[in-house]
Image 1: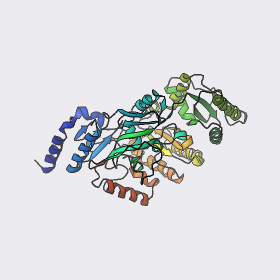
Image 2 (image 1 turned 120 degrees about the vertical axis):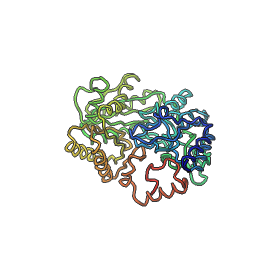
Image 3 (image 1 turned 180 degrees about the vertical axis):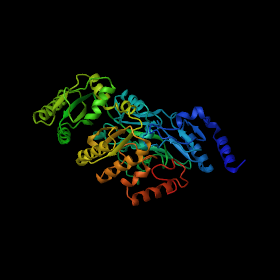
Image 4 (image 1 turned 30 degrees about the vertical axis):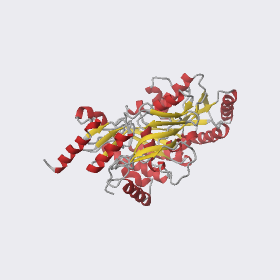
Length: 463
């Protein structure tokens, strides 16, 4: 028996107390994520229940020189949760408890495997509110939200995950536990190390617990769906809404092709009688008060009178508002009919977004006339989603390079929400300079000298 095989058997024996999954049938669901990327066969899948178990697993793998892939809800689109051949997979799905509420101070401490939906429901039952929201809310996990610095629909008002995390507990590659479960807003006691791990995609440590900042539960949400004749009108409306409605929480934009297909996919008539180039679903949340409702009505009346908005739908119930949001969240249904597709999650400065979209659409339609080209996104924070397909496999890399080159020229980011993972790694140069990447590599070597955690994500382990 060769030494490598013996070392693997010895490692598995040391991890036997954690009930490892190591047969192919049971492992199947842990082999990939929503990106569709196909990975290797892990040596074992472990599902710890406590931080101590995570630390013991990490220490054993570190000693044996075995790589670890960390998995949350498997909803990422950059291939970050896809294992390599022979990896030890740590799935945090069993670490799903809400551990501690501070009902006075407005914080909650949760284990990393708790889903976003479960956390939101739990805190709302206590009349508090956690505002992070996205289409994968029922599946994505808080630890993954931290690892990718998730944004979602309400960044405009509340910021990304980075602004919503007060403290973390993290296990390093060698099993060391960093307990940084800070619960206060002001804590200037040296470097705020939690920021080292937020957005690091599991390459520096395994997030096991998170202290989240909460907000008073909104008494009511106010929504409006607007049809507009131009992108210029859209940016004007955004500025008007931000100045007249301080409680504005979402400003979700859909271009005409997207709305047409979303309506059809949901089996509904298009919401407006006429056709318009661009649509926006805006939302404000806060007190249930006549003044709040009146402020929204005045904004829309002014926008209609000045020709900024061409038509408006005001839902008369929360059910009607939910139906409008279903169109915004219908991308999953649309993508199923576009396979093989390419989905871009990019950041573009608002001032350059209209020209960027027009240029991409023109060139892509000319080069790939049989494909669909759908645009939607969170205009308030500059996060644009672009989905295109179907495409041949051999066209995927040239299309990626074309779009990311255009992103670089626009001064944007190749990843707004899902990180770099494996799939965007070859294109990181379009958003980060060589000096920045060199510093990232230096930090990785300092914190994880053996490159044991999520190796090959963001940049190659050999770099």
